[in-house]
Image (cartoon, rainbow, N blue to C red; front, side):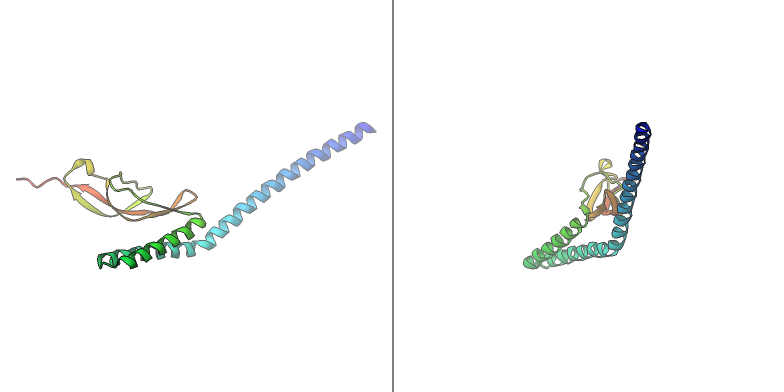
Length: 155
């Protein structure tokens, strides 16, 4: 009789272990679904925050050209605040480096600049806007101008 009870207990233990594994897996899947839904719900607001940062960067450039130093500083502070908000939501800002090779996985060319130097061909001439990543995935490409080799005119 004791052997039968031990056998029943072993069976109940195995069944309990299996059920706990199923519950853990379902909990993990549920958390993943909830996180994806939360990201999907936040996406429009995050896109608007990115646009807001872009708008204030543009205003800063215009104000700097007009010589308004105090207002350009204010624009920089607003961009920094928006960037911090995005960062808290898991949106990472990244910048393209002038002179680096163009990387179509993270950058989008918005123009070209002619160069007679073959070493500059395919390299970044100007970084226009930063890019953004969420969980390592690019959600907006960094916008850049890329050098394009143009041979010098024949004499």
